[in-house]
Image (cartoon, rainbow, N blue to C red):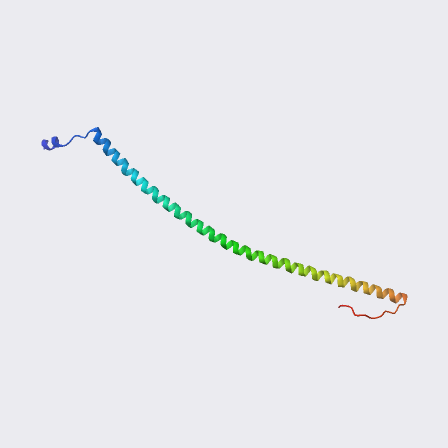
Length: 119
């Protein structure tokens, strides 16, 4: 058995340095592969988030277009209501004035001629 122990080659500092360098090289290779994989995953997630965000913005934009159209319709309806109310107010004022003139004419004794009025 002694012969076998003597036949072993002694480990030199150069051999040890080579083994350490080889080990670091393998670790660097694994880190590089891990870095590439992580970068790929991050890029995929970023692309996924960008697509989701774009789809959501498109959806919201469509909804806002609908809201904008609804607001325009409400404004238009409001203007129609205002115009109708103004006509009603004018009619009420006219009728009130017509009534007052009739009363004055009655007191003064003026015979009123009949004409068509809007009702």
